[in-house]
Length: 346
Ligand code: MRU
Image 1 (tube, helix red, strand yellow):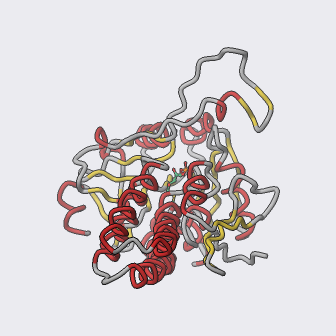
Image 2: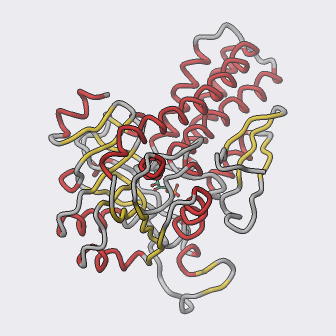
């Protein structure tokens, strides 16, 4: 079904098709979604995940909602008011990635410029398809800007930031890919990424498909490999970047950044400009999603924790801007001091 180019989000036959990431790497199954509530459930259940992929999926969820509301024939004002209500439900599906808010805001702006429901439902579909195309182009651009920053040695990454986490190509893993395709001799170290195992299940699968040499480590081994000078660069993605550069990303990113700083290893964050949220001054204002306890107490269906073990399962953490060497975006590389360079670049 898939060649080297992974396209996890596709539109066809009036339906959204998602590559079900909960089934990878065992099965490459596209699921068909015909309604916006099914799409919201797919987001909550992590069948699609990764900030840019969530943005594009939210764009399609809005298009599905508009098509459904177009059938109701209740007048354009009612259409806009119901679409706005639905957008809040899509927004609430996963709170940390700002890309969902970015996509629904863009879609509401498109709807508000239309003259009636039919035009709006057509335009929202076109806009979602545009978001999908743009995302792949943006990621390729990020790759070009970043590939010379990680041109040799062992590169550590966390979670999954590849084609699966986007509409295609990837952000941090896109930079790795661009460096590899440029002929650089690199080797990727990636974490398992407890508890959802995005590294073990998804990043390992993508790197193997791309033929990029890689080694998986448990999350807790990163310090050892940095301290013994095995790692030359760290590169991760982002779910939301505050105006001062504080960055929310997969739980464990903060620890990697502190360890990189302690060991004088450059720490890069690759993300599209749409991940920057200038409405939030510092990382303290970024909402952190807390996921169900059974992601931690169980491995699949098998319980691994002792009965009645109390669990906290925050899915993201905040890396203070001072630990970040540079952001790699489609507009170029942003270096310190972020308070001035971020607004100047976007
Ligand atoms: O919980 P997930 O799998 O959606 O978390 C994904 C991450 O933390 C990624 O690093 C981030 O979204 C950037 S993806 C290009």
